[in-house]
Image (cartoon, rainbow, N blue to C red):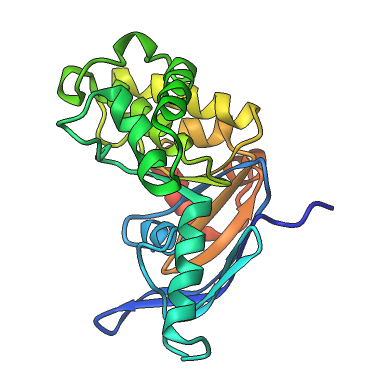
Length: 254
């Protein structure tokens, strides 16, 4: 069996003494699309931010493609080593945010081309050629010279996906990638994510789009109260969930 690309072990995280993650354990298989669902405030977005190093966590271990980062509360790893591991982790993980986070003063092409030049030292001409290929992949090549404000929300989110791909991450994380979009624009973003899944790119998605979760995910993870309550293929989770909390949550959508 292929080992998991992400291993989360007993991860705990609190804000101002209030626990948000209560000992999360989860494996993510490479080349699969995994969807995290659950009620607001259950820890889904916090878990994503821990996975890409935007948040520290208190206890446990997160391992991505062999790079392990321990919780910061135990003091088992020196501060400098902890920072180096977190930096390596960020290099393995791309993030697509709810609010796009494109640079408004840069064209779409530059938004995609500049990060690998600055962070990875890619030659500018090579970076721009790569950016054109990625914009073509997400259906935006003809808009490469426009600025973010000239794009629809769906187009901005597709540009954000291209920008994340430009860093050649091992894993792509999405935090509610369609929640800021008009309903008519949701499908164009979800179509890109499905295409990336067909190409074997590992993706972890926090979403309330149950139709997308049911149709596109290979694994559904239901979280509640800072814990993984249930996980499994969508045909099981959506048709015969084993936990009453999962059933209650899905009642609102199905």
